[in-house]
Length: 90
Image (tube, rainbow, N blue to C red; front, side):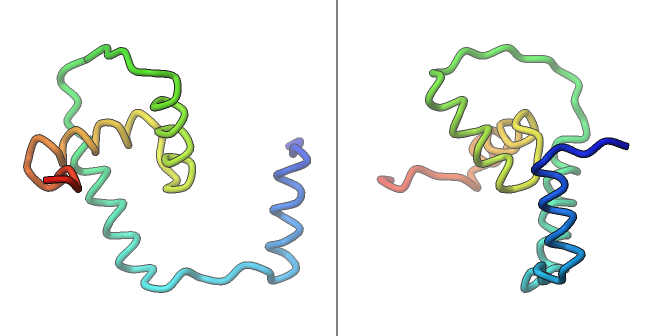
């Protein structure tokens, strides 16, 4: 398998022991399981338009979280409509 330059750098850093386990890994795993469960039932397709700026923010945040951006958007919408995500100004 051919690796990109970035993938090679990551592999090298792992092999050199530069990576450490995150604190509360079990909690993080459970968090992502919950995300997955919340988005498993995909029985409707929706197309939305959003600004390029917002879209890029979603992509960056999803990358940080290790999620596909569609899953993150779905999760945010799910949390909002169920009252678990509120505007800071409220």
